[in-house]
Image (tube, rainbow, N blue to C red; front, side, top):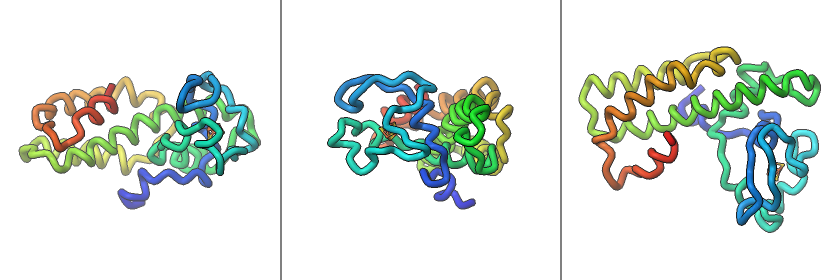
Amino acid sequence: MTQTDLLKTECSKCAALCCIALAFDKGPSFAFDKNPGEPCRNLTGHKCSIHDDLTPSGFAGCVAYDCLGAGNRVVQEVFGGQSWQKDPRLLRPMMESFAGMREVHKRIDLLRAAEILPLDKVDDQRRRDFLAQLEQKRWSGAELNDFEVGLALEIDVFFHSIRKHLKPPFPVADWDSALG
Ligand code: SF4
């Protein structure tokens, strides 16, 4: 899988994981409240029944959201193309894996973005090593569940150590909000 492909969201290869896992509040971006883990009431099977009219229907937030390929990677790589639709017992582990994979892909995105920073040789090699670990690994559900209390912490410590290089025009605010 190429770098570009890895973070490319392909909804047709997913099982509508974001439409179940994520919470949103009624407001300018969403027309009603939804709790995490609750299937959106606009969901029919794996498809959004208002897909072509999201913004006029009050769901601009759905248009803006991008899982960075985490959903399709979970369904295809971790669950071999299976869906909670056919086997409802998969719903919970799929939600958990999706949460973990979102964290993995968020850090892949940041590690790639850090390529333009003036890192010394040691730090740049660490950046490449972390990236290779995240991109090349074939993740299991258990490994994704452990990610945030293991490797993610190591990577975040690394991010803080190179923070001194973050200056405009590098999107410092994006970096902070991604890590926040
Ligand atoms: S409105 Fe459509 S795209 Fe947005 S969460 Fe609901 S089903 Fe998914």
